[in-house]
Amino acid sequence: MSNPARSITVFGIYLAIAGLSFFLVPNMVLLPLGFPTTTEVWIRLTGLLTAILGMYFLYSVRYDDRHFFRATIFARLIFFTGVTTIVILRLGSPLLIVFGLVDLAGAGWTWFALRTQ
Image (cartoon, rainbow, N blue to C red; front, side, top):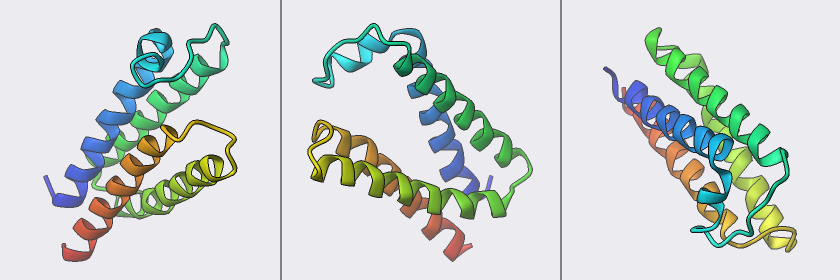
């Protein structure tokens, strides 16, 4: 497995696990992170979409799809920027930055892996 594919695999697994966790047991994830529990359906729908996104990541590795790998770099940077904006505007908890930083680190890893390949 190439280094870029490895970075995408790790991130795809992270997305799948995080997504399924938010879909199946959202309050067990929210509470330890310091977020209030919820009964809203939106957290589960977001979790489901996140898990499906993880599936796309994992599928792209099968074909070593470098175009997809590159596209994820920009998408993850946009996510980081969006989360940071939400926190700066005080629209959400500063703990959201953790999710943004995971995306930023993943984007950096994939970028570096593609560049050195």
